Length: 266
Image (cartoon, rainbow, N blue to C red; front, side, top):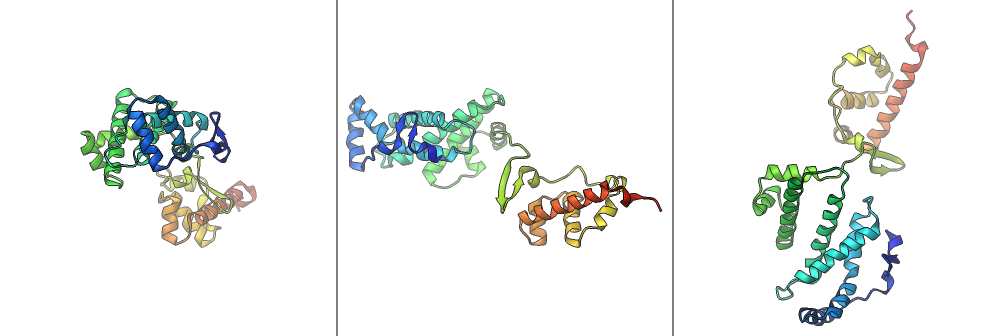
């Protein structure tokens, strides 16, 4: 994101003005009177708000220039709809509006097609959530959102889930000392709980050659279907350590099973 702090969409961010509260009040009075130049000056004086918001989306695959432009649309909508008589700072009102505009853009440009009715339900829920946060300054529950939006919570959960961007099993979620944990490391193995496949592949013999900790981790992971985090909590080590021990154990077992001299019939 640092590369965008100098110039973005042709705007040199180093030259952006910082408006005082007094200047904002005077400009807004001129805006309400129909002064278009005051509106342009107010927009330019608040572009730093847009820059601060798009930093939150730096991990997305979207071009930062595009997000900046969409954020500016949200900023302009905020200016056009802001009521300066309610005693709320403009930034407090504008930031959720800018975020909402960017989120709508990202969802509408998602490669996975979601029905219009589902998107509408999700947008209503998100709008209700933003209003609740703005009014109470705390994260609302799904029940609060459902009540405010007038939509069943089950429908809200389904709609919000439908508009989420998909993750790859190989997306990294954590890095510790060079050992990266991936999404697949967070998932329970519910398919391979039966011991039949172990007998067929002679894995029992391979597991006997592991040390007690590695053996225990393999059993918890692949026989009881636990995630690495659950294993880490049970044996009181970090998830990164579980990942390292698991990989070491699987490598040892694979080497044993691939060695033909280990399976000779006496």
